[in-house]
Length: 312
Image 1 (cartoon, rainbow, N blue to C red):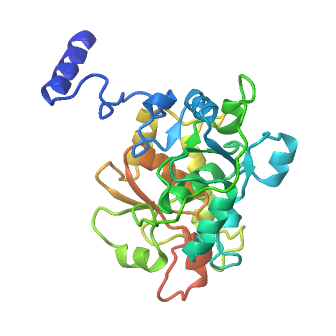
Image 2: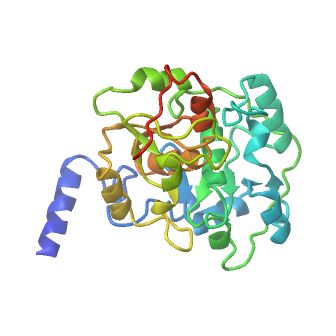
């Protein structure tokens, strides 16, 4: 029976004009991470396997180590370029989660890091001990117009499991110039205007206590955006920091009302965890955007215009 179903599936694929190896055909039962550098289709692939990442690095990709400085000091990654998400964001609350508004400033910062338009960027963090910083930076680069930024399934521990890769130095300033897109980002008033839209799914990627109304990270008010569904971003990871199988992730998202045809907006406290969440969902084929200002900005705005719901 299984063989018959597989034959029918392949027949349907071929009748649609696709070959078995076509990039548009993807297995349904495994995490969607490109398994080699040659297999990466950047428009589709935001998350790659450790092997694919090692191959990219061997080919000269720029490696950004975006872990917290304390984690960097405990386990250095030689020749990786150090960066933290704050370097590319507004400096103070309540807009600390938002990207720097001045494109010229961001262009200079990214060029100084060695970011170039055609050079792939591998973003490295620690998914177990971090906050999703690799997803936030991959999302940042994609939002600013760099289409070849990827993160690693399993993060740094997975990358170095068979030994640390030999990373080439950044090699001087890059030539990347910021060209923003709104494909992956929602601003505060955009979200306000979208609330109540049929089929829109707003996802709160914070801890359950935050969703219910606690304010542990400097929020002005507690609660969640009206109508938001909740899933902690780490609920998409196993104990080792690797993504759950695709089928399991899709099951969890379906329980929230999210499908591949559903517009999705994610938020957290400052757009870090939700940036990771947005990166993963786009990799899996969802139409997801990140609200980077997130709860820091929303909760500091007038309560009558930007309401919050507290779970009883």
